Image 1 (cartoon, rainbow, N blue to C red):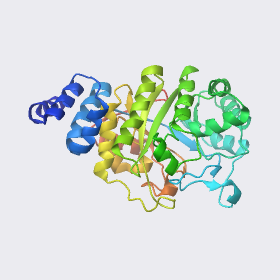
Image 2: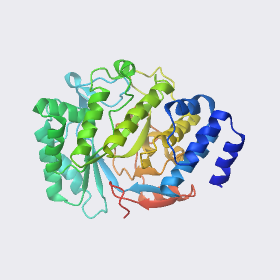
Image 3: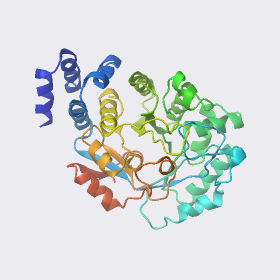
Image 4: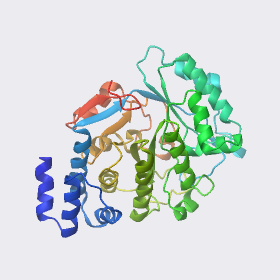
Length: 371
């Protein structure tokens, strides 16, 4: 059916669309101009056909998931991103929390005997929680449960730690790896364009620094993910520029595992006047990402942000990963008005979500080894 659908586009589409479809069918790279054309001129269903073809080229009918849980060390943050509904300014932190190393290790101990493969640790940028604090936390977790993969710290958190410790990105990443870090997530990328960052997150690290930290991660032999915050004040050109920079670094380092579009949510933040993107726009973002990022093996839909039903639908628009069971009370997105206010799925529920969409559920570890 997929072959038939893409052949129909090649036969009946516009000249520009035919050329794009032929590239997709031949597993060739599309250009920036092609991606902008898809955004501006092509309907979401057609984008879905192209994205699904490329998805099945890479991963067949498989949709991956893992068993993970989140720890959020603090929501106190020195930065003031306009889109954030989560952080508390350090000077006014009455509603903030700050976990000790013992409290975080206790959260790991809560999963004794449970077949969890990953702990995901991200939070605000707290001025008193430095590189050594987190290195000791990593060492404690590794000593307690050596087989547990630790995916931790966005490039924004790492930038702050490294600058305070007067370490280069390469030195800092090697230090954290030596203490038990297994990989890093993709948060903090937002939109790379300077003119957008100046309006939504002016005080945190810029695109070049984000990319530098991820390149350093790859250089020390660790993998990372990449994200894009979409659906606020950016244009489609900004989205394509963002993906281009990621694709260029992936050509160079090969260390990215998956790309994760993150939908902007407008509840209780300084951008609550911005209307959220529609379902059609969400699906188009996923589809074009899958078509454009030919050197990324995986495309992930973060189901707590967009909701279970939409995440299920994205599997027909290029997505081959639905993240994990997220067995905790993560607040970063729920506080912004995400669909899932209590983001917990049992393994059976996640498997059913995948199977009902006609896909094959495949449990993986963080590095995409099949379990």
